[in-house]
Image 1 (spheres, rainbow, N blue to C red):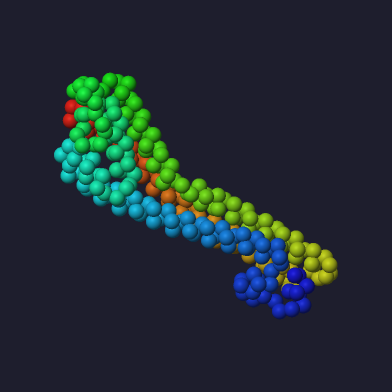
Image 2: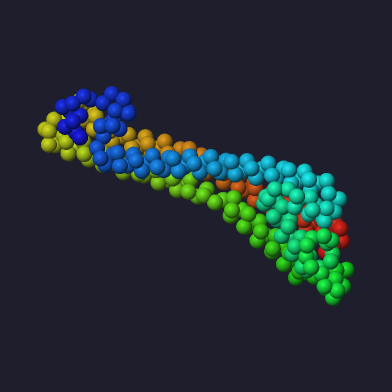
Length: 246
């Protein structure tokens, strides 16, 4: 590669450096290109998912706020498209209906005559704690689902610069070997090899910068999303208490 650069046309653009680079450099650049494609796919995918969840959440909360009682909110939520919010409400209502059968009408939970007699009683401390645990479990499951693939962005952001540095080191080694073999150390002979070596560093940074920025943005949005779900779970418990059901 070094002899081609010395004897042939000297690359004058980054693209020419890529086309005339060594196999090792092209191999590293190929891996970085795959990382870049996957990274941008995940960036667009998570942007769409968070945007979709925001739209569904706003629509859900607007419908629930109109409902005077928890049963009405449940029926209104079940008519909406699936979202983390109505899944959380459904889990809460179903579990509460199992603890106090017959206390919530029209929730689809079968009620036996013996169990219906317990509907007038309030929840024990253990039952209330179990309800909170079920809500926390559902919030954690929805948070984990929303966080899917986000760690990959952090992986690409941390690995790509190192991979680019590896390509740079290999390129510099190749350039120095060419200098030693050719016996020429002037700037004209050295510059093309060093420039080729730096191409992989640029490629690694080009992959890492958007990946790290997107990772930090989505981690922030994930925290806000989890906080909203936790707040809604507490609101469910508060609504049950306000209506005298616990």
